[in-house]
Length: 253
Image 1: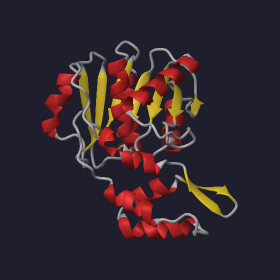
Image 2: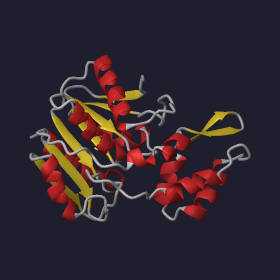
Image 3: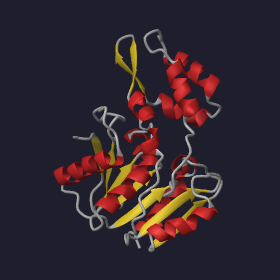
C-alpha cells in the first residue's frame, strides 16, 4: 500500500509513526524542531489520516507498507520512532528487518499485551451520526458525554473533516480498527533484538510499569529507558520540550 507522508529538513533519516486514531498532523510541530538535525518523515499508517483504507489490518501488513515506503523514498538506516501502536509497529519492523534501523525509539508502549481500554472512545464514535451533523461542535458535544479528557476529545476531533459541503467524515477507519483490536493490543513476539533502543515513558502513564522493564530488557539488551515527569501516555504532547530533549540526547550520541 502506498502510504501518505510528509518530509521536513535534510540529513540522516528519522521516521515518525503515529499511534492509534492519530495521523501525521499530530507530529508536525515536533518534526519541524527535529528537522534542524534530520530529514524527518511523518507517515500516515493504513486506515489513518490521508493514507488508503483497507479491510485488512495487521502489524505485518503495516510492516510491508513501511518497507515499500522506505524503498520508494530510498530511506536507508533510519532512526525509527513510534508512539503507542506506532511504537509496537516500529518494534515489529525491527524484528522483521533486524539490520535496517540505525536506532529505535519507542514512546510509551511496552512489549506486553494490553487489556482492551478504548471502549469509551469507540462508544463515543458510534454515538456520532455524521449524516445529521451540521457543525463540528455537535460532534464535540457528543464526545463530552463519553470522554472526560479534553485532550483526547481534541485529538479525535482532528480526524473530522468536511468531505464536501455539509458532509463531515472521519479520516480514521474506525470500523476496521475496532475489529482489529485483538491484533493491535497483542504482545510482541519473543525475539531478541540488538538494535540500540530508547523507551520513553510518561511518569503518569501505566503503559510501561516498573515491573515491565525486565521484559523490555529481554527483548532489547541494548535498551535505555527515559521517564518524562508529569506526563501521561501522550508524552510528546504533554511535555514537548522534555520529549525533544530525550530524543536528541539519544539519537545524536
